[in-house]
Amino acid sequence: MKRKAVKKIYRIIKYYRENGMIRFIRHIFAKVFHMEEMTYNRWRKKHRLGKKEIDRQRNEQFNKMPLISILVPLYCTPQVYLKELIDSIQQQTYGKWELCLSDGSGSGSMEHTYIEKCMKQDDRIKLVSSEFPLSISENTNRALEIATGEYIVFVDHDDLLEISALYECVKVINQGAVVDILYTDEDKVSMDGKSYFQPHFKSDFNLDLLRSMNYICHLFVVKKEIQERVGVFREEYNGAQDYDFILRCIEHSGNIRHIPKILYHWRAHKDSTAENPESKLYAFEAGRRAIEAHLERCGEKGAVSMGKYLGLYRIEYELESEPLISILIPNKDHKEDLERCIQSIYKNSDYSNIEIIIIENGSIEDATHDYYKELTEQYKEIRIVTWDAGNEFNFSALNNYGAKHAKGEYLLFLNNDTEIINRDCIREMVSYACREDVGAVGARLYYPDGTVQHAGVILGLGGIAGHAFREALHNANGYFSRIICAQDYSAVTAACMMMAKELFDYVGGFDEKLKVAFNDIDLCMQIRKRNKLIVYTPYAELYHYESKSRGLENTKEKVERFNEEVNYFAKKWKKELEDGDPYYNINLTLEKHDFSLKIQ
Image (cartoon, rainbow, N blue to C red; front, side):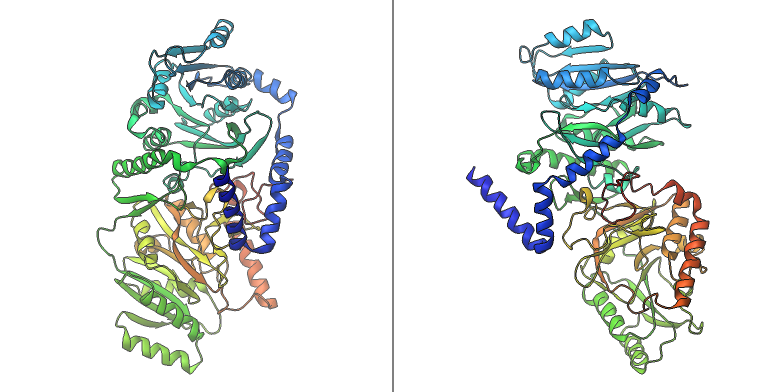
């Protein structure tokens, strides 16, 4: 008890030191008055199904009515939890299911009277048991052996399904192409089953996020044909056997669908900080090995290590060679900004196979031109190319012009008001850019005060698009650790963005009608149309002095130009804006940058 008390006091002091007085008070207020839980309870009440809708779902007849096999490995399961689980399954509005129970507790360890009673009353319930205790993988595989459904659902023995869980899955299965995998959003339910908390509103399928953590988790539904192709659960990954299984399944799946609804309730203690994750180090190590095996099967080479917290992972992709990278930096005066940027490339970065192309855009100060001369005399790999377009600033045209002069295999678009922080920043970005499935790579950017300026871009945020987690604290983890995990986004900022020159030329470069705003978002959208991923990596870190070198949108002409570009982008990407960002979630607000719940 003393150790727990000391740990709790240490966490409180640490939070205060890292977050300051105002955020500390807000945090304490929210904890004491359960503000997040109250907000989520309001959301749940609003989205709870009424009797009329429940009856409608029960009576609906789909064109495809697949049998769903629900697999539950039991292990000394308390009857109260088992009863609640079976009740939640029997109450499903879609009734064509079978419940495949496997008791791996060992002979005499678990009472079967209640299960046998349920089996007599409902022939959709099956039970297989073992005389000897089984591991979690063995236990799940025994349930798999008695499954006859077209789709398989995995449920833990003390969790709960939302009443419409199977209905929503079958509804999606009936929408067009054959669905190989489905997964849903989830929350946690207290041990007494009365309180719901910590909702996880997930991204649509996000390969790089899945390689950073098992964000899919529950509810996971897979076509039996896919399961038969990849095989059963593997004992060597016990503790992360579900993670390993999901990774194997996605490798063989063409149509992976996400249902943005809370359809699974994971039973957990509300004070989850009291748990001891170090006691399950074997499970996290198994997860690391599962990612390693996944990369090997995908023909990709990389070192997998633990992330900032247990359950998070980092992949450092292997570079077989160091390709030439052309760093493109538009510049007009602001010699001090440019000097800091250039110095950080040479002093703070360990990647040497570079050329730097400074795109001169009408500098009038002698100090700037003197600095250009100094640079070209000192570094043979630095060139100055002059863009002559009068006084008009056109970020797109500037970079397109610079790219024409680039000799590198990869382009790194870099604002002159940035400063590289970590030595492997460029190496980290190019290691992702070299992947065949990746189109562009972005970095984690900070304001001068250390708060987050960019951790990916969300389509529709604030209107057209906005930066995820803007103004979050320097050491913040973000919503379900998304600031600190590599992942796919719809776009990243071109203040620091890398891509292959061949791809840049293929898509036609930046759209020069977007002179200042949203040109980087537009370019990323064009890349995604070619079925390439846009990756954000938190392990490439820079300071960004937020376009102070260009000035603010504070004149009538600039405001008019901005509005024109907003309208142009909105018309060009009308469908994508209406559909919403696939890497965000429709249940999260577009008015704030912190992934908070949308309450209407």
